[in-house]
Image (cartoon, rainbow, N blue to C red; front, side, top):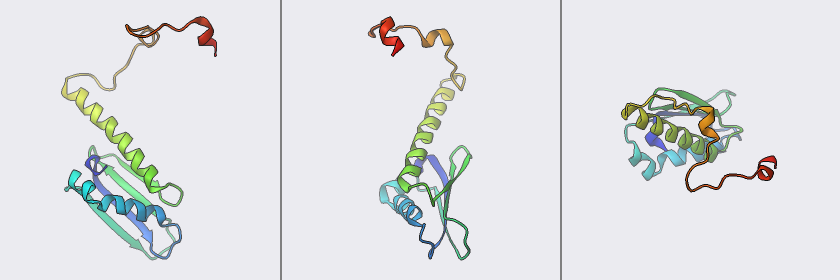
Length: 128
């Protein structure tokens, strides 16, 4: 997960009962496997003393920053969203390195073509 990130900032008040997501995500970030995937990723923990809700801010390697409300989003969900976006970034990089345009635009007529090895759908199946 950390391989897609350049920075992680976790903010919470230790007395706030809503910090479970922050603690879960912090544990995932501190796992040896995660740290090995990107030792250069900065991990900041800000312990607050005010009523600011717990939040997790991540900066992807392409500079895009995303803020998650840790009061209502489980740590595992945040991890999953980071992995999905990271895979998207890897795909984008692969296309750019190959000299292809990004984003890839598939013409509408190609979306409806049948391909070798697939069965064309019958009219009755399309209606369902």
